[in-house]
Image (cartoon, rainbow over all chains, first blue to last red; front, side, top):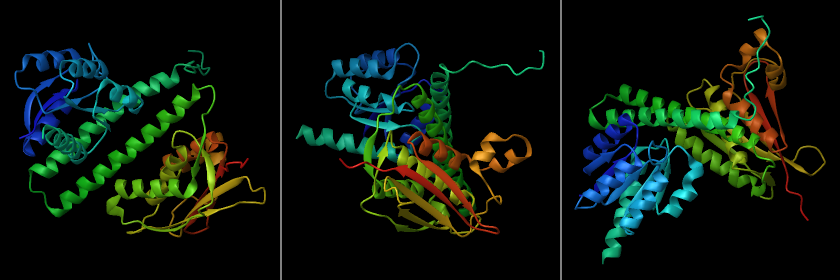
Length: 126
Length: 237
């Protein structure tokens, strides 16, 4: 079962992602409402998530900085960057994001990207 | 207040404000879109409810396109020069058609395309395809028929050889008679009521003009009409 960490400052969005992903058979390991909390949760968890869903514009620390820090902790981590700010795509990819999805998107598109990055990481393991 | 109009003086700040506003609107759209998806995937809705859910999704996606287009135009205002590139017009038409079918799958739009493969025009920030898409969506919204039929033609207007025109034709288009976009934006009062449901074509006009082209509306007396967008052609060296 693919595990996920959801990072977004909008409670409504976090709850929707969580409910839909759980409905589709994903394991939501945790949620965070800003970049700093995401790093804290990531560092504290023994078992790392297969995928991190990362928003960009958040209080305290933004998604690009949080992605950079998570990639420093684990260079193999898969991060799917989701943002309404399309201009940040280049920066997000440079920070280590594997995929970029502009908001608003359909959950089917997010799930497709999650399957893609999970498959890539399984293939790399062999 | 002395009754005089006060200027908000938003000139330089406008792009930044629009960026913040559009970001929040897109986040709101995300919540609505995901809520609809959640409702349609978690409960057994009847066909009619599913139809409404599909339409609501289309409306959200159109609102997203409009907000993105406005934001793009505002951001361009603060750039010193328009960084242009060249694109093949037929490819941009194809991109717009693909997006149209993705945004409005339930409208069953039937398209006939007559593209000129040699048409190459100046573009910036995907505004050629987005201007065609905005106009196409607006055309579908203004067509009351069950399955709109639109013809897209690429043609060379006049004899200067420096421009290319995309002509969108719909024999069922329901437009106000003698609609003139220039008059609408310059006049106030009653005539402005004609601008209702013309957001797409107005954005298309701003994009085409930003690229150095122009747009016209060809209205028929009863029903039907055409949107004509003229783009600057790439000058061969």
